[in-house]
Length: 139
Image (tube, rainbow, N blue to C red; front, top):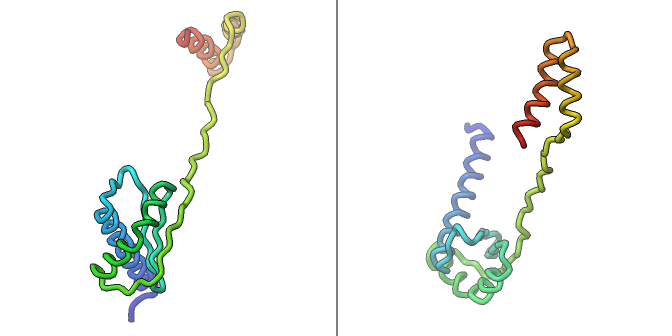
């Protein structure tokens, strides 16, 4: 008897491979460039659903839907009866905050250098001197 994890994984990978084959077929049929367009093809309960993040491509696919459905039925031996095009909003990447270091002025740099000379703790002295050195490197 097979482990349940093996069955689930094989079913998932099989359906993903089937969706990839269908998507590749539509890319070739419509002469689309994969680097420029995102298109996913899903078949479920005799319904063909095309997902894209480009509204212009979605409109073009709607007008070509009968041809696409007929070719998929013929090539993959399916009986798709319904068709649908969905526009999926593109995934937005969150804006990264600018990690600009706080720059100290010339006077503050001189004050830190003077304070560093009087400090006995070596690590703290080096840290303060690094602040003044980094200021000089940036300018």
